[in-house]
Length: 421
Ligand SMILES: *Cc1c(COP(=O)(O)O)cnc(C)c1O
Image 1 (cartoon, rainbow, N blue to C red):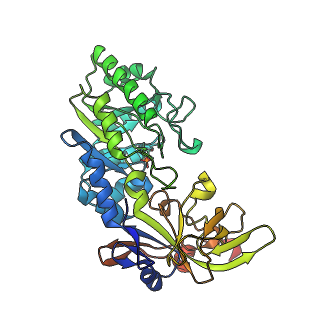
Image 2 (cartoon, rainbow, N blue to C red):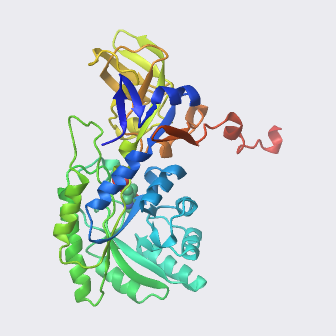
Image 3 (cartoon, rainbow, N blue to C red):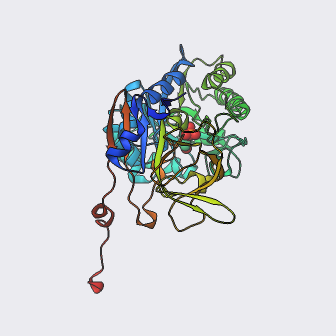
């Protein structure tokens, strides 16, 4: 459910006409709905009512400060993968004891920053990382609360680039070796064993792999207990998919996910951590773009728009589908087939092929739906295009939450060497 709906054939974000925002900020731009963010967080949390939970928003999915702050105010902690993301979480007032640090490549200086911040948990993904964390904690006279991220060798049934729980993935520690690593961790000064963590991938729409992975974690939890390692925190990661193609493939509801968790862990009495990203922010954002040209060729009819792969890379990078809708809904069903492409000088800069749309003309506005997750965060200046602004709507108000990059900003980090001056 989201708050991007038509009123009198015009697309609105909550109570604001999207065309009105376009007029003020120009195109392209990302537009987020705070009501949708709040609703998604509430729905996710409701599934676990009565349980001790820490729901940490996966900041990498959308790290705009206004988005993080909206979710933080709704009660979210933060799942972070870099010092930069810890800094973002702190800026938004998220308490250190609600921050979980994931990722396979934490550096010593990032560990120091996190230890000095006093974060809730480090999710450790390898033995060398465990050793460096222990050493770093000892140096600072601190203790690092850890989970070992176990890799259960379960196929999440999602896109290969975002599958993380296979033996061949770079993530986590093989669950069959994890007992030894916990034993080793229990002897390390500077380390406090706190949790087991698991995260098998992203955009998971069939929940069976979750169930399998959780059952494996439950068995492992019992095995640890038998070996004298009592664990009271289970971090079950993120990964719930969202509907990109709402009509054809509605994925199961977060409440079905909660049911699986409750069922599998019905005899576990401790705390659950979750790291949802996409499911909280995916549908809460759109990318708005203007048609520059319509270019019919013998083979295709190209709709050339002012957004490109550098603004939203998911279609070219993951072959992802985004519903694309006109801001002005004219004839109900479309009867034109367009290849919707950006201006970037690569054929890969294609958002959709042979997409059925109403007839569109230069100057018309379109919206890419479900662009709130892994959209703006993956933007680049490729082709020396300015990073596009982000706007947040709340009721009948809207504000720019990230300015459009200026050309001065684009160039200010670059320096000509002396011999070229
Ligand atoms: C990316 C990631 C998440 C969030 O994944 P979503 O699919 O966006 O929910 C959570 N935990 C870890 C460790 C991740 O790498």
